[in-house]
Amino acid sequence: MFTFNHFNFNVFDLERSLKFYDEAFGLKPVREKTASDGSFKLVFLGDGKTDFQLELTYMRERTEPYDLGEQEFHLAFVAQDMAAAHERHEKMGCICFENPAMGIYFVEDPDGYWIEVIPPRK
Image (cartoon, rainbow, N blue to C red; front, side, top):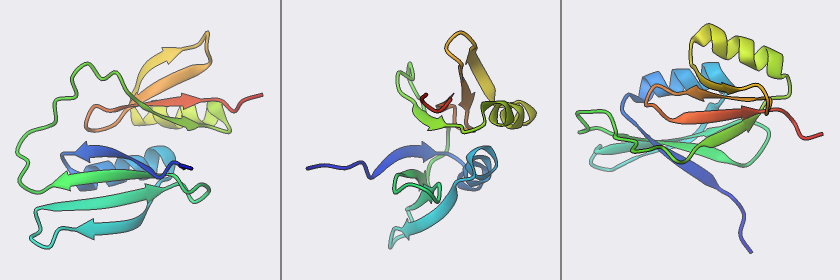
């Protein structure tokens, strides 16, 4: 009856976020929508393999970063090559938490959102 479509993050600096998601995960814009009055812009990012999209919402009038509260939510990516993914994110300086026992780690995007990186299921 239902299928996943997209997940949204509100971002403070759209260009910085677009650069981060491209560099960290290879996500590219697949569609955009700008409000007729220019007050906001939506950019949907895709991985080129699945239909799932990450929507970045940029509010033009926003003057301060978002308060993410206790951040009891996250997005997750499967990395086919965990060693290469970890090396990339380590070089970017965006790893914020690691759990070697579980074989996972988290990166933090420019707005403070945490993204989990997990190995493929065996």
